[in-house]
Amino acid sequence: MVTRFTALKNRFIFRLRKIVGGELPLETETCRFVLTSLLDLFMTFLLLYFSNRGMMRNVVVESNPVAQYFISGWGTMGLIWFKIAMVTIIVLIAQVIATKRPLVAQCVLNGATLFVGSVVVYSGFLLVQNRI
Image (cartoon, rainbow, N blue to C red):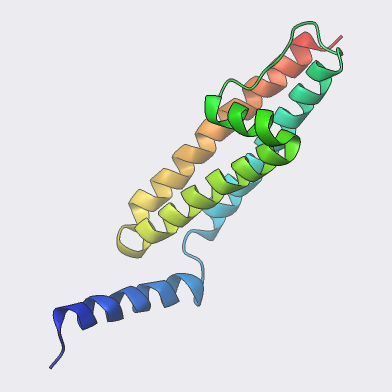
């Protein structure tokens, strides 16, 4: 006789194997999001680098208070690890959602990509506008 707990455990293990062992659902969307996030990290680094060295007309600071906490505590490595953690969490959430509702997960990843992409465009605008 299979208990309810055993059935839940088996279903969880099946889904975990599907995510970890099989083909990654939504590979294209995940790659787009990760690459856009890398561009965001690069643009943020450039803005902070040029601003801290007086190579910009205005002082640029990180506007996200959580990211600013990591930057002030651990410097550039804190920023890198914070951004990596955020990307990892979003990708994992989307992959878990994709096991039951792939269209919703696709919308989550595409929306996150558009959001981060708009931040990259804005960062590029700030870099061009304020560079000496």
